[in-house]
Image (cartoon, rainbow, N blue to C red; front, side, top):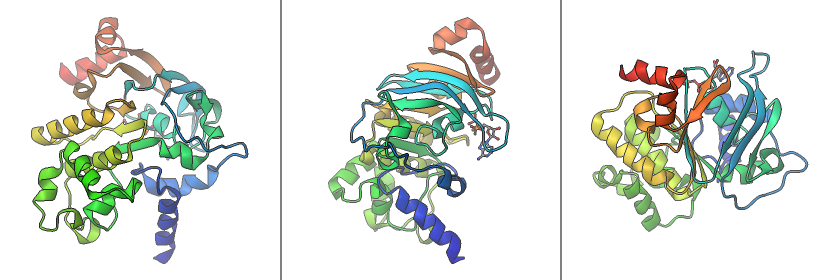
Length: 288
Ligand code: ATP
């Protein structure tokens, strides 16, 4: 029993300032040993947030390639939505930016600097990940929100809570910020967890954001609160949204269609509808 706990602890310690939530963190335990600082890695304290994929190919181990020569440029501050069938490679594409895995060919750069030339700690300090499947630990709301910025004063934490549309929930708890969550405390709904993850990111304030949209249906009110919190969060940052429902991404600066490990179309919602290609078919399938 202690073995796995120690392993999880070591992963948490690897990311104290970096990733406040990470997808499939148990998988990461397996992936982590392959990814390390390269000899040329330097700490890069600030980035603007331009992201570029140059001929990037990637396969999970011996499996067939999941990404095949992907080229993609995202300007700092833009919101880009990734859409496409399940298993097309959208999450994989995003997980290569913080180097959860290393590319097999090509390279990824931020502000023109290859991610491999940055220390993992500095690279990951510039990237925030928001997802429903957020990593919560057995501690207070304050500790869980301030995870990426442990010295944040209460005032700043409350501001993040308000912007993440969580104020009502926290205020309704007798212990307020000290309310325990996780194993020993209140159980949070999927929507509340996601807003907690948004509050974490507002506090962490990274220039690059990866949003993994919830697949499960939320009630309309929660959905609206989350959309509001997300648009607050995305402002002024480079944002990649892994989109499962097309309704929420209509206003993205650009929509990128990923199919079978390749980028097959990109443009605005209107441009892609007019093109009558894959996006228009996906749209047709969801909205009739
Ligand atoms: P979804 O919309 O369902 O989230 P996606 O477009 O994000 O899908 P990925 O999760 O990137 O797709 O998966 C792409 C492919 O890689 C799939 O075939 C998936 O089974 C495979 N895959 C994902 N993670 C792993 C892993 N850790 N090991 C092996 N194969 C994986």
